[in-house]
Image (cartoon, rainbow, N blue to C red; front, side, top):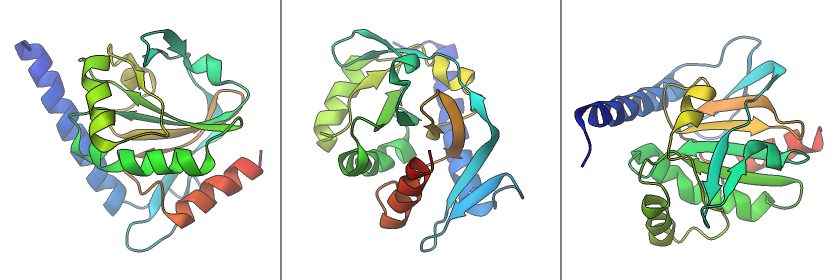
Length: 193
């Protein structure tokens, strides 16, 4: 059973995720600091890290409960997505992330969907089965430390991490990751490396 502090933390995280989703839809990116991949009525608001920002070595576990870290992905580009099963916008974008991994995933690129569910693997595995997510691998940070270490106030949060483990850009809030124009935007960024 969740204590009052944990319930408050969950409620605040849900509110922050909802606020971030609204901000992404209504606020344009900062001048000089953002790029936009336009498509339809919902543009992808990208906030570039200029210069690219080194990231902390996040610790988490995989589907077999083996310790993993962000440093293990050095040498390939990563689309790092922080999410949770209780986050409605996160739930909605997970199938798109799965399709993006199926389309672009390989030795040079991986979508790393990192759950911050305190319930750990017991919460995430049934969710993957429920949505029939097959291309994504399961990664879980039950401590939810990644959220604070990446300077985020809410989820979903997605970062494009280069081969040296540096943040190149981020998208706060949900995004249509499997849309053709978004996939092309990511392909161009991968080709520019």
